[in-house]
Structures are given as C-alpha cells and as structure tokens.
Length: 489
DNA sequence: AAAAAAC
Image (tube, rainbow, N blue to C red; front, top):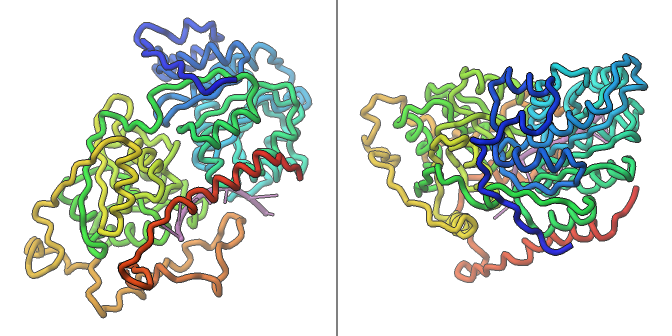
C-alpha cells in the first residue's frame, strides 16, 4: 500500500440527499426528525464506503459531521441483520466505538441513540468516573452498539459484563488523540479481544507518521477519506494575538470579555489549576464562568458542560479536555488564555468556532516566553497571525480603566501581596477522582504553580541552548516501539 | 512542561 492518497472531492452536498444512499426508512425518519436532508462532504464520502464493508481511514476535524458519517452506515449494516428477539443472547455487541474522552463518548452516544430511535437496535455508553454497576446492568440486557472510553471498557470485559467476541465493526474516533493520551496498549488489548474478521474505521484529525503506522497495523486495505486538509484552520475564523505580560494575562482576558460583551465563549488554559483560577477570577468580576478539567468530578464536568450549552454560563474555562470533539455548536469566539504547547492543539481549540459556515473569532493571549510557541503555531498553520493591540487596556494601574469604578483589581497581585493563598486549588474540588488514582501524591508535588512567575533562565543566563528536537522525538520513539512490538498482556 | 484515562 502506497502512501496515503487523498480522495478529497469538492463534494457538492447541496445536490446529494441522505435518501440517495439506500438507508433504511427508520434511519431516514430519524434524520428528517432532526431536519437533516443533505449530507456533509465527509458523510457523502464515508457512507457509501462504509456500506460496502470497507475499512476506512478518515481525516476529519470536528464539526464536519463525522459522527453521522460512520454511525449511519453502521446502523444500516446492523439493521440488515437485526432481529427483534428480546433475548440478551441475541443482542451481542456488534459495533464498538472508542473515544479518548468521556465527554466525547457521551456525545457520540447521544447521536447514535438518536439515529437508532426508530429501529430495534440498542446502544449504550460506558466510561469511567461513574458507578460501573448500572452500565453492566444495561449491557447484560443486550446491546448492539457500545460507545466507550478504553479503560472502562476493559474493566467491563474483566467483570464479564460484556463480551467482545461478536464485534463486527470497530470505530476508533479521534485516534490521534488516543495515541497522544497513551491509549495504545489499551487499544491493543481491546483489539486482541475482537474477532479477526471485522470492519475497522479510524478517524483522526491529523496524519502523523504514528497515525499512519497505527492504520497500517489495524486496518485492512483502507479507503482514505479526507475533507479539508488537516492542519488547515477554518478560513472563516479571524485570528488575532495580543501580547501581554505574564501577570496581566488574566486581566486581559477579563478586559476582552467585558469589552466585547461576549456571550458563550470558551477560554482555554494549559493547566487545570490555571483554568480553575481563571474561572474563579472571572466570577469575582461578576461574570458567569465555570471551569471544566480532569480534576473535576465527572458530575461537575457534565454539569458545567450542560450549563454552558443551556446558556446558564457564559464563559467556560477549559483545559484541553474540551479542545477536541466536543460539539459545542457555533461559538462566536474562542480565547486562548495560554498558547497551547502543541501547535496542533491550537487548531483544535479554534475549531470550536467558525463552524458550519458561521464566522468566528479566535483570540489568543501570550507573553514574552511564548514567542516560540507562537512561531510553532504559525509554522503549522502556514500563516502569520495578526498582532493586535488591546486598546484602552492599562493593567499597570495608575487610574487607567479603574475609573470605570470596577472593584479594585481583584486579579492583580502586586508584588508581595499574598493573594496566592486564596488562589490555591479549591478544597474539595475533587472529592472524587472518579476512581482514578489521585494524581501525584502530596509529597511529590512540584508546586511550580504556586511559585510566583519568574522568567526562567538557564544557569548561565545567556546560553539558553535551544534543543527541542530530542524532547519531541522521545514520545514518538515510545509509540513506535509499542507499535513495532505488538506486545500482548 | 500539561492534559487525558479503570478500579
């Protein structure tokens, strides 16, 4: 098999209809219910190919309609052999969808359930952080389609609440993300439990060498589908960066939010601590803000997401748990409170806005020490991002915008002011880690985040030897070794 | 460097 070839067609979705694919009336009815008539480009390409039973390697950003692209034909194929018996034994798991995050699993499951609603097929979702028993109960009752995060799925396998021996179709959604998160060993264990004879669909936002290798080991003669070149940012998104000194970043975000009177904004932070602090800071400024990150309980995560979707919260401060996949529709604006360490994450983050033809703004705050990150991002997206100036933003005090009568600079620790104490991570923020081991033990914590910011300088000051290559190569080697070794447990 | 994910 040669290199990945692009089958990207300037599809003409306006002329294609879902009814052209020979899908069952039950599926078409579900689509009609939701007002869907025309497939998106990736749907138009994927549906016929999946219906043919081919393996697929799909490159697609979120917001392209990828979920329907694989779930509609899967449902169709399952229906072709569906039976209406109520016996659990007659409802073995036949399609398995794996996702990297719990929220994404829930979201995919909601879609699948919707598409199935006029069919006898049953689907369910399993993920960690919540009680396992109800999940096991549902699966023992028999389901054809399971959407899962890898760890909890394996848990169910060990508990024997699920058998994977009848799985005919496997979907790996956000495969690049799963690799990044170290799910490769779990993926391999799961795949070892599946029948050899099956159809595989893999979706990834990027075509890194690791992803190609994964595709080569798990897919059989796949058809490659690509819509919108990966690494290309949506053209509808207006991007701008504002340079601010590190200690004024939070004020800058508050200023931007207030200035533009923005509703429904996601603000991305690189750290969980940073996200919590920023959310609280914004709340103190009177905004309706909430944080979502991996140290929140699953309940809190869901609650924040729901509140945001319902419009009860205007600002969702998130780590990269929300960077990919989440279908928070058509946000007018995304703000990067930190520039992401991985340039690719920038693309995913700003992909939350400017979707479905709408335009959007992507605003990033950065400071001196982030020049390198900005350069990496611009290199990846092959464009220079506009440097903006925050008109009227005067964080250094001395009057400035304080004449608006705002409460005195809640988010501006002066030197020596000991606001740090009150900025510690909330107590009780994670009474329940969802069963995952508590992150680092107290005595092992490196409290870098509690220290005041200091521009880090090498020991010799001037010779800040720049050697990014080896550090970048390391994780890749690990992935390559795992892929090559195909170790089994 | 960070984040995510099973018990």
